[in-house]
Amino acid sequence: MQQPEPGNNPSPSRAPKSCLLCGLVMALWIAGCASSTTSSTSATPQQAPQTYFAPVVTGSDTGVPQTYIFDDTGAAFSQETFYLNLPEQVGPQVLNTGAFTVSPRGLRSLEISTTYIKNTTTNTFAPENHKPPEAGSFAVELAGQDGGLVQMVGYPVQPLVAATQCPNFTSPQTYQFVTIPAPEDQTFLSGPPIQQQSGTWDPTTDTAYGSVDIISSGSTVTFQNINQHTLSSGAPAQPGASQVTGACGSTTLGYVTEIPAQYVVINPGISANGPPQATVGIGASGLLVEDNGSSAGGTMADTSPVISYENVLGAGTGAVGLPLPPSTNPLSPSALAGAQYFGFIYGAGQTNASGSNVVPWSSNLASFGFSNVPSNCPPVGASTSTLCGGDFPVNPLTGLPDPGPNNTNNPNYPYGKYDFAIDLGPASTSSNGGLYTQAIVYVLAGYAGNKTTYSFHAVAIAGRLNGKYAIFLIGMDPTSTQPWAIYLLQSN
Image 1 (tube, helix red, strand yellow):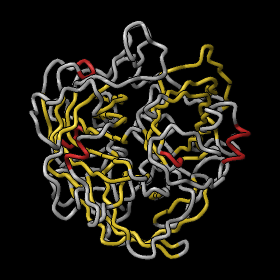
Image 2: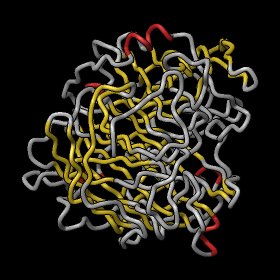
Image 3: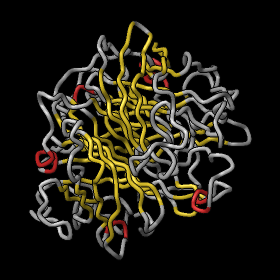
């Protein structure tokens, strides 16, 4: 893979930012808005702004979990977080604010109107107004405001979940999950590391996917029958316990479950260098998102080599999960492949022993299954379990995704290019069509400047959220030696 496309690149000089809608943010911080059960990725406006929990993804400038507020009625959004050890901060620090438009297919195009730029010497913030508003950020939001995906300009995609209440699973609910990858640490390639680099992922030894049964009683949430696997379906070098218990309650991130103890935020700021804790949010539609505490700065006791995250579910920086499809209504691979999706393709990059980027991460808006895609997918052929699509064209003047010639400002982006293909392969027999351990990803010539066509092995999970399909995938690219993640939500 070549360098990321313009408009999707990491931006080393970009400072942490914040915005002016602090009143809106504070009022809605723990609003706990109710969710509906309408189809996902709908463009239908909801009645109230909704707060979403977003885990750490490598490339974030704050390095701590964030929250987003989407007001579908007012077409406005806000992003905020608690910074690490910022004495002057009281309450959440807002990062960005702005407005968005929604295409007929449900893609949200975000425009940042105001940010705050942090002065690292004084730890104070100065407002920066964007005139015109800064384009290039996108989101795909589940209907009923249950969750979705967001990619802010210059930063990687983050999964979102509206954790509006604690889980209410009186009987075990089985989930499948995939790791949110972090950069490959190239020190892994020459032998075992002395210590796991914070926020890195080794596909040969670390968890790539797994399953768990979740049951709850009041604020107590139990994760049992935890099974974790590497990308090759082997056992991870340091798996988590087969059963753990967490505490759920109302927090600054929503109603999240913290493992192993209660969620604690020191206001101002977040305590750093403590033992990592996993934070799990579960939405009304069933979407699960985990932040595994890799940014806490501490390490796990009794691990050798020492690891810097709470290894309850995913490695890297966390996990995303979907409920196991019921045996009475299993998923069909051909039906999954025949649907239309918006989502993001994330290349996590690679770091060296000092933590410097060797291969930069990239994150690209993508679509799969739309009408510009040929019925057959060369070089894949006519497999009934193949999804075809790719990233969006980039306008050479703006560096932003472009729906077509001479049409750079049209918010109703139709669909992306055809330069990517995913062959899910056969489904695992025990997963009711929800697990694909033999998936193959084809990176075609033209993707993000790629000059050749190649493929790599991946693992995908699939499920339904409010009756619509969702597909989450993790793989390892042997060409650029970096992890990949693909997150797709069915379009309306």
